[in-house]
Image (cartoon, rainbow, N blue to C red; front, side, top):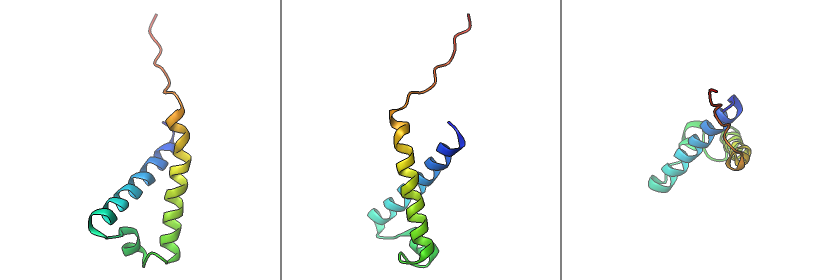
Amino acid sequence: MNIFYKICVILIIIGGINWGLIGLFSFDAVAWLLGGSASLLSRAVYTVVGIAALCAIPSLFGSEPQARRAE
């Protein structure tokens, strides 16, 4: 997995944890850390996480490289 997809996965995990906190406790950690859900920083984080999720979609349909057998 190249570095781009690793970054996407990390951002998706952050977004998933935030959504879990919102669902379980009505607590938006991104908004809490960055000054409210309407702040420019919070909106930037939401946007970057969303873009990371979109960029990760093709990896669902790609195939894993197969290991070469020793001959």
